[in-house]
Amino acid sequence: MHVLIPSPLVSYTRKKEVSARGATLGELLLDLERQFPGIRFRMIDEQDRVRPHMRIFINGEQEFSLKRALSPSDEISIVQALSGG
Amino acid sequence: MAKAKKAAKSKGVALFVATRKGAWIFTSDAARKKWKINGPHFLGHIINHVVLDPRDKRTLLATASTGHLGPTIFRSTDFGKSWKEAKQPPAFPKAPEGEKGRSVKHSFWLTPCHENEPNAWYAGTSPQGLFRSDDGGVTWAPLPGVNDNATMRPWFGTEQDGTPDGPKLHSLIVDPRDKNHLYFGMSGGGVHESLDQGKTWQTLIDGMEVVEGFGFDIKNPMFHDPHCVRMCPSNPDRLYQQNHCGIYRIDRPGNKWTRIGRAMPKSVGDVGFPMVVHPRDDKTCWVFPMDGSGVWPRVSPEGKPAAFVTRNGGKTWQRLDKGMPRQQAWWTVKRQAMTADARDPVGLYFGNTQGELWQSRDEGRKWECMARNLPEIYSVEAAEI
Image (tube, rainbow over all chains, first blue to last red; front, side, top):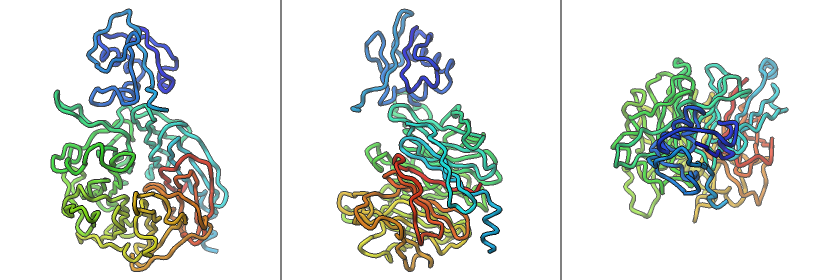
């Protein structure tokens, strides 16, 4: 799957767009962690919650559950929440 | 002359300055008069603490987070030339299904373990958590003696409690005589002591006061807010504490704190955040008072910043403000942002909430501003290089 990476996490990926695999959002994030060690904990906390000021969109729809099923054609965008500033 | 010779042999002092927007390293000449500035490191990251490992004098650890990203710890083994991220930063265990687990918002305090435990470190977090690394900061493990302590849990409060940036575990102190003997403070949650390297803890709050007028139970650690606790290097049985409710001293094995801040001028009071102890004289410590009246402005009282020193264990205090602004200076100094070097005379350093770094080469008699226009300063640590 195609994954868009926000600028604060490009220090891990070295590019703004990467590919990752997974049958669920949780699996995709683990694949990102495998490829880019350390990246997952910066956006997902130890209780598997999306951090308060991070957002994940699947085909333009906001998603908070790591159990959400994915299909190979899905477009994933990881973004910083606007958070008022 | 002897002092001059001693200074000539030393390369200088290093200051590790952590701020709301990154970290800087200042290094001085032998006389501490000329300083070189190195940074920013981690521009844009919220850096709460940067600490040099005194056991090898090369390894640095830095706690980091950003406004959006989760917390981590960076480590350098070449005095800040290069940095690597921890493979496993401090994190609480995953809670069982159906239970709400805690999440580390940021690592706040770093303390190297005993000198006989090379590469071992402690970290205190917000919300309150205690972690240990035995591999130089690469991986961190939670210490269940605190983090899963059912007795302590109510003392942590909720996410709505604590300082504006969240409740914190801080002031991690290792007794230089005994690696198993530890202290820490929690804002809020009191002061605690362990004799078995953190497996079990006992509370050390007797004599500490709580905010008056609300009927708070003085025996409940939940209502105690130590801001900064320091152990005297020359006498590990003596500790000083700057608390939300005053300045205290304790002499172990005694178990009762004495409020020595009562001797401070009434117009200034004894509220503040930092506490600095003399490297060789257990009767001398410095504080930097803050306005804790009304809505807690957290600025210097009357807009006139000053450090205060006691040289007799808290019986009397003297104001030290020569060189500081005389009026309309509305800043203060946070709990980790004031420190001392080990020189004779002792050098004092503090960073303020306006991004200024100040220095005294004569134990606070005269002050000068070393740097302006840095981001808000969260911590300053000094080391001989």
